[in-house]
Length: 176
Image (cartoon, rainbow, N blue to C red):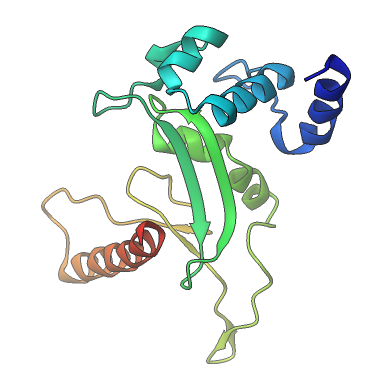
């Protein structure tokens, strides 16, 4: 690929691939991100090999289970249609850190995270909520289970079961 073509490709991909540095990490520059993506697509190499070639710190990608991974955070509706996707964070990060670094967090902070709600229940706007796991922080737009300290009420246990069942349905849709 010529340098001119590569520059053209980088400029076209800039809106989707360019990232900003945060307090948690220094981002990979756009030209390097594009080079990594091209190399992965062209060769099918493992991430460990790509990390050695391009200088990514492979230790950052070890997750809590001891293997390399990259986060994929997806928000889907009950039909399995994606509303928001955020990917590429190292597997060593905590789920809540990934959420706070995501475009979803940015949109939700401005109140623009989901499509306009048209549901009314008993004359009240029912709204939409995102169901998260216990690692996420509770927000007015994000429901999560009660922490199970062994002292949950019957109602809290039912709520937790229902949240879990709903999340399992979505996870099954994504795996199938």
